[in-house]
Image 1 (spheres, rainbow, N blue to C red):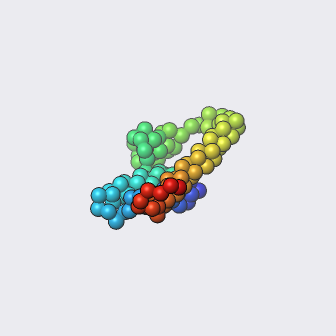
Image 2 (image 1 turned 60 degrees about the horizontal axis):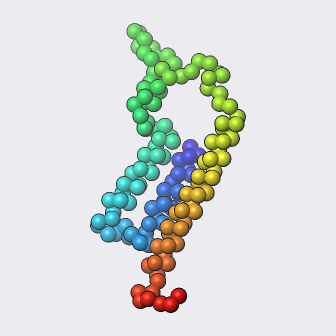
Length: 129
């Protein structure tokens, strides 16, 4: 749920950052905005476990049905607690990578937006500055 709530403003920020140079009301550019929106919605739905990115992931969440129609544990569910537990250093490394990646990504999107704003609002003629 946290990834979906955080992903929504990030998708909006990403799509908004392109608007100074590439306005979405241009009929040639609208499909690119819709594609970005679709990819973002898929990511949100995947984080909510509504859709799956791969068939193997989908099959791992399927229930086993016996001959009487009763359901048992999912196919891919691990029975051992040790198998599902990840080392703490791996979790810390993943968290650090995610935070650093997010900071770099936001910096890149902001750079793209500010470049578009300065290019759009710049002088149409050459200047010395």
